[in-house]
Amino acid sequence: MKKHRLALIGYGGMAGWHHENIREKIPAIEVTGAFDVREEANQKARDRGLTVYPSVAALLADDSLDIVTIATPNDFHRQLAIDCLRAGKHVVCEKPVTLNAGELEDIMAVARETGKLFSVHQNRRWDRDFLIVKKAIRDGLIGTPYFVESRVQGSRGAMHGWRGHKQNGGGMLLDWGVHLIDQAMQLFPEKVVSVNAHLFSLYGSEVDDNIKLLLRFESGVSVQLEMATNCFILQPRWHLSGTGGTMVVEDWSCKGKIVKLKAEGEMTWEDDIVYTEAGPTRTMAPRPRHTTQEEPLPAVKADWTEYYQNIVNVLEHGAELLVKPEEALRVMKVIDALFASQEAGVGLKVDI
Image (cartoon, rainbow, N blue to C red; front, side):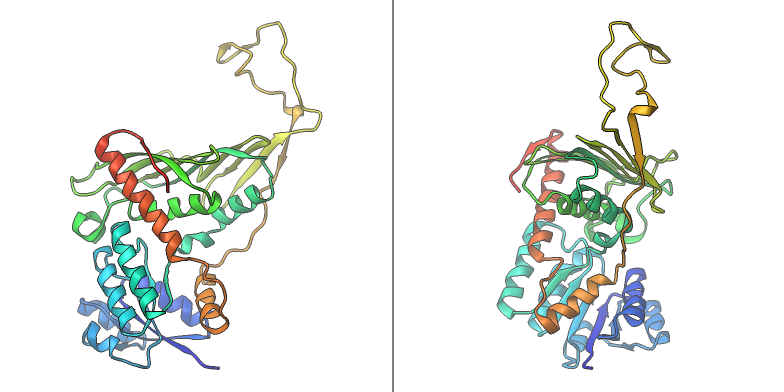
């Protein structure tokens, strides 16, 4: 069996993940080499059996390489991707693919010119929590969703390393924001018609580290995204409101449930006021438990390495690319609009 030889530019934490998971699970790809500007990273690559190139130019001159995965700080992605494509390599680029949509359009033009594969490693399309939500929506388990909340929250403080520097493309919107926006746009493959960004910089002035985003889609569904590094009481990973029920995914372990009306669960208004802990109210009085039913979350299979298996299938069998540059471009256009919303201090109408 012919193996596709792959080298990594940048050999930090994510590059190590690429290397080990390809080695263990994707036999059609052989990771053979790496380059990093840091000697300690190069030594780690050597210790793991990789050839370490003295420069990017030397790596690109190696005609035995088929694929290059770029896993550097974000501000290097554009030029490295272009150089790799023009050197005749297929390219996988870590996210965010670029700092803005214009830079990605430059890469896409070169990919068309060279005829080489170019894709973005949006690995969190294979997260189990996301796939559960995707299946629930697809199968109509809560009717038509109209408000979706998606959150990742922690309390460890500032963005660390180069992610804390604007020059490198740091900040939460370009870090986790890319993932959550991509997931939202996969759930609702339709136009985004408005965006509103609230970006906070709690631990420094260079980049955003706690953010809330609101996207409205053409069908009317609204998606609220939150990423926090200063949250000490966590909210659910997902909360979905639909015309036929409510769904919650509590955390990364995917505990959760769906609650919906029983067929005979319709209620009628009574003239008498209901006295509750909220005071006298009928609208917010608890619904009788016998009128609802609880269902488990749907079962799914999830494996991040399906991304690389798709790369192999595209190269060997002409399969459809699962993470297309055009999809990444729409995400980057939304991110550009969110930065503009933050700058203006208001929500913005868009057509993306």
